[in-house]
Image (cartoon, rainbow over all chains, first blue to last red; front, side, top):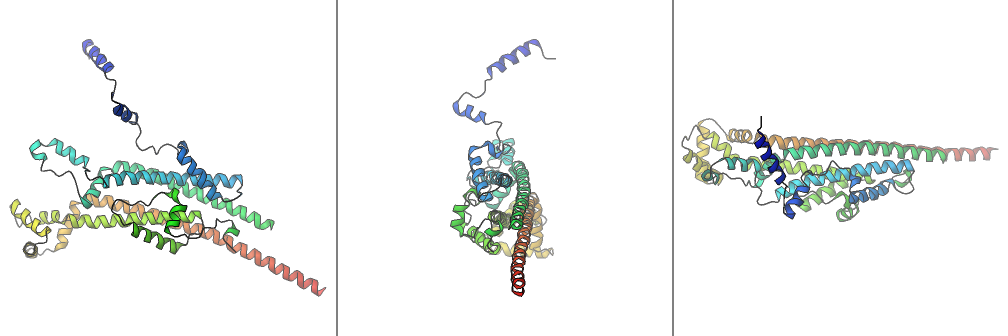
Length: 179
Length: 205
């Protein structure tokens, strides 16, 4: 059972904990909950929304029916989402690959557990293929999450493309019967 | 009959800079620092030349296939490099029963990794004395890197499966439009025959 004195002290300490104080610290903490932003729909982003509109026009071609336009929009949305996921994955990997000071977090933890004297002998900056292998290992969790987003986007795009093809075929058939 | 006449977007296969401009929304090529842009462009040109994309869907698939193939090639290359770069670790382990003193073993392995002739000869002699070859060293190296290699293999398998799935979609898409094209040609032929038959009937009358 926590004593009344301890509870009082905890509350006083909690009131004093107001988070980061510097501008940079506050800016950083605003992004605490944000990891990759891939769970947000593409249409929530104005730039991606514009890409979706432009790609929809290109897919739908001239004078599409309302149904065909809607199906084209679904393809475009899935495609832009797929591009977004792939770019996020690529950025994650390329920034680590291109970082000359990249240190493996797992090795850094091991290093921290050793005494200062021994720590100097442990290499934490891998080079060449070992570096890439280490990055894949260190980022396995993020990469797996991105892979799930990519798989879903690919599936959505496949179904949307098939639906668009089927609708376009129907339109084409109707036109040929009219002729 | 043109592609446009069966409802498809007329897209010829543009060259690489033209393609980059038209399909800018696909983003830049996924190349890491130091990777060969010319090799990527060549792969893009080769796959595009073989597939001859006929509409925007096929253009998107070409890019997917190129990017996935590039990833597979990159991972295979890195897997081989990883094995080569860490072979000294496997050798270190294999030589344990022959050279019990760590420093002695370490010195020999360092010499072998630096491709010093005397060190290579000594390693070959030690391995041969136990009936071993470099295969044993590579097997030990594989064991040392098994986690990394497995992870790369999984990524390769995923990329290959996605590439195969896209190729199936291309076939499906083309079969659909192939059927439509055949149907349109058949209808055009039927209409032509009907016109000729009507003409014959009128002439006979």
